[in-house]
Image (tube, rainbow, N blue to C red):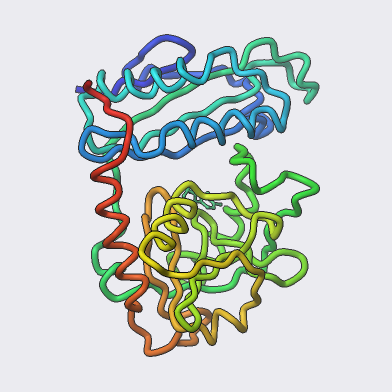
Length: 292
Ligand code: PMP
């Protein structure tokens, strides 16, 4: 059976799920999106994802014509129609169809899409051995422009950094901001561990404030690990005791090399492994039931 995709209030088999070529999401990247996960019949932090989506839409003055509870129900119903328990969920809101000019006033109704599918995981090896990343020459966009706190449909900055990672044969690239501070990776937040303290860049550096990042900070504190939101440079990554990335798709994935330099002993660290283990427990206990 083909997967069923929600488009503006209706469900279509994926081959027939279509939007207008005049949609400003397509023509201009004018919109916002979310990547969410369901584990064992429960959606992880659904309300937090929906809040971030609505905040992003507010940031670009898109008035989403559904209440947050209705949007949550769209996600749950799309999962039910596809009989999914473990899934990756993509919500997309665009300004909608307009004309070829960029004036948003020409777009009368936002486009709303919900796609749910089986999740494609990183290979297990990356979690056991850790990954090697590079620093991209592309800088994270400044908060005064397309603020990285918005999960906007304009991901070109991240894609440019991903191209650099691909060229270097690395799975991920770390982006710095314009002041040379480490911001995040193309699709993940970054953490380092130094002298037992878990450190991650604060939002004003220019990051997407990850839902996974927040969950990890909470659970680290709960298990007695000190957490600091603090700016740091590449040097602090090179000299860290541990490093890992966090994101909805990746969960927490260890980083053992940056720009060819080994971090500590080149193996995933104990705090990283503990956090990944705790996170795996958390997702079992928490979440919005799909089939209640
Ligand atoms: N940073 C960027 C640029 C992202 O696209 C993402 C999501 N893929 C993240 C961080 C992690 O956010 P979350 O934990 O909410 O998935």
